[in-house]
Image (cartoon, rainbow, N blue to C red; front, side, top):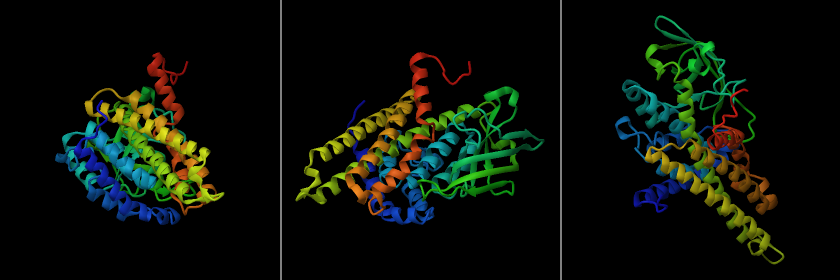
Length: 386
């Protein structure tokens, strides 16, 4: 792997950094304070080509390679994790799923609207009683003469209140287990689709999170993504893409913690000199730099493998596990360096700390990533009941 970015990738990274500083950072504190899901920023993301960034141009996307996409997500993650969530869900979960599993008709129907930001999408996998055990879906899809009728509930769904199309995973035949799972592209503009905001979150205050009730939701036959039995594979392939974007976003949080801590430690004086001159402060900064660089290299490796079309589930899980845990540690350390000033939102490290905690939970918990890694090393699937 060549660690030198191409001229185009360097330009993409620089453009994303400038966009983040100009359009995202300046709004991030107030949006978080007001729990405001900023549709104006969403429109600007779309105008930059960041929604559906990895989608080929023939379907309305920017056609970026995965390494370049990771560079964009890193910069946006440095600015605001709530905004990064929009990019991750729209691009990595929804668009990548349709791109890989959809028919040509489905791709041309959905992808241009998602890439342009005309439509937002959401990924309806998690349920009130189904998290890590993704195959154990309680939502049911019943076959009808004209298509399917879906009943069930989904939980912790990012952008569920604003989505025009929802990827809903449902069981068609419980006796088949995961082989009975289907994925349906659901039009949310019907009475049976009932989203509700989830409030009082610890972090991601500027991100939309929903619970969704599905009551006799009707979909046509051509709304089925892939075939019955593909649902679990669709979910896992989309999560592979989603974990990559979460890893890249957490590299951005790590980098933001380093930059803010270096800046503050050179300005803040104690005992007649800047705290940056204290050995223990420098040690904390060095620890953050180490975690940032290691996370970035692991994420780049996963992106490189994706661009080569090679198997990358293991490497993506490694990147996701390391980057999310490292970002939690960096955010904690950054607050320590800032002292009392880091405990209020005058500095972005307070928001980094609140926002980053969920990254070790969604797209597969850290424990699930360890089981994926363990399975790859031993050949034994610890998730299969004895």
